[in-house]
Amino acid sequence: MTAGEGLLPVADRKAVRRAVVRLVRADGRAFAAALVLNALAAGAGLAGPWLVGRIVDEVRAGRGVGAVDRLALWIALCALAQLLLARWARYVGHRFGERTLARVREEYVGRVLALPASAVERAGTGDLTARGTADVATVGTTLRDVGPELLVNGVQAVFVLGAVCALDPLLGLFGLLGLAPIQLALRWYLRRARDGYLAEGAATSQVAEIVAATAAGARTAEAFRLREQRIAASRDALAESRRTRLYTLRLRSVFFPAVEVTYTVPVAGVLLLGGWLHARGAIGVGAVVAAALYLRQFTEPLDQILMRVEQLQSSGASFARVEGLARAPRGDGAEASAVPADDRIDVRGVRYAYERGGEVLRGVDLTVRPGERLAVVGPSGAGKTTLSRLLAGIDRPGSGTVTVGGVPVAELAPELLRRQVVLVTQEHHVFLGTVRDNLLIAEPGAGEAELWAALAAVDAADWVRGLPDGLDTRLGTGGRPTDGSQAQQLALARVVLADPHTLILDEATALLDPATARHTERALAAVLRGRTVIAIAHRLHTAHDADRVAVMEDGRLTELGSHEELVAAGGAYAALWRTWHGEAGDTDQQSAYRT
Image (cartoon, rainbow, N blue to C red; front, side, top):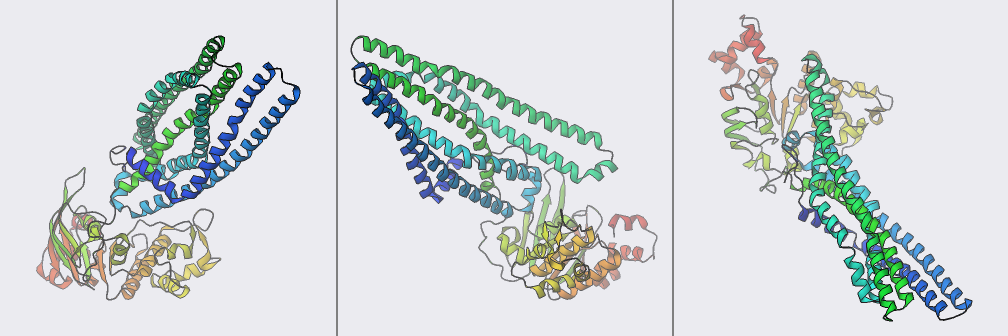
């Protein structure tokens, strides 16, 4: 079951129950301790109504003030014991909840990191953001507050009903029958609540996605005069969110009033039946009073339980969305344990089409030898970037195979894939933290010398040394801002630290000025000598320096050879090269190739 088109999966009820059992077992001692303490607290609370009934019987029997005082003292002691035990139970329950929430967060982060980039792109960052913030926070509130409270009140409710039945089975049965309307209202509510809250969560994700996409593409929206379209999309998303929220509100507005009205039914019924039985000598007044007090006491935990049940529907839907990531496609596959025999990359009969578009690659065959420098050139829309994504294992081909050392690239385990092939684009991210933190992401065990060497390799050592605290300077919000070229250099330094055998560059130096880009590319080439480098070339000097050049047109590989061979062949690449050097006036072709 999915929450909507493109969104990540949502766990079903069985999966959620299994996840809950797994989390409880992970901290079973604390959970068992909370159960025992709650049972003891509930037992202490049962003494009060029974002792009140004894007082009534003692007074009717003509006993003195001393007997009443002794029973009253026992009531006070039991109330104090209940208070202390309940407080201890809540303390243990809250600690259990916080530890369990930590496990939920850690599992969520691990699952997000295991998602292939293609799955994230299809779902959109809004869905992941909503699940990782609002949904995880809702689950946390349940584990920290709702769970312990539900445990306390559940044990109390069971003990109270058991006490009524122990006093008189007939009164207990009558009291249970009086709760039938509540059961009917609860069944009506539960049949509708989960789907309602899931729809509300999906609508919240859509709002987050619209806001994130609009903020990220604000300049583009202005340039193409898309302001009204973005406003309309936002209004539609907000309208859907409002509709789903009103639906869940309507469910609550029916459920809670119906429950409140029925609270008085069991108490009134027991008093009437008890009075009728007492008039016939079948039961004492003290027992009737105690049973009525028990049922009156029962309404408090029952009210709390029903309120928590409502919260559980919301948090259950949130937990289903959080746990749904366990069913999302992974970066690893059936051959995740396979290790490539060598570094050779083979592309055989590859075809690929995006979900809402035509075929982008049409039967591409290519072999990239270990240690080779390959440049891929071609006009816009030829399929260069799509091919780079397939080579990096981000997407799977629709048909055909892309393998490294005989193993499908898309089926490599994430850790192994990142050591085998790394794709670097012009879209880079500076993480909150220090320069050191941003670099250690690629190689946590790197030492000081290795970090500086990586920075020097991409011509970034000078500006990092100029920072107030060098490697320990904080970047991003609250720290030193970085421009696009610096962010790109940090990303390339991470590549040097990661030390993959194959590096795919897709406009990786596009944000650098031409001189710096040329210098950085040469520095990287020196560092990565002996490794495979595949460059999506938008500057022809990259193709000139490569061992071979692959020319793509209309999703097909039309030419393949060295720079000299292709220039001598007089084909599309030769025409492009002459245009680049001003030997021909075909500026339209040059523009089409975006070099």
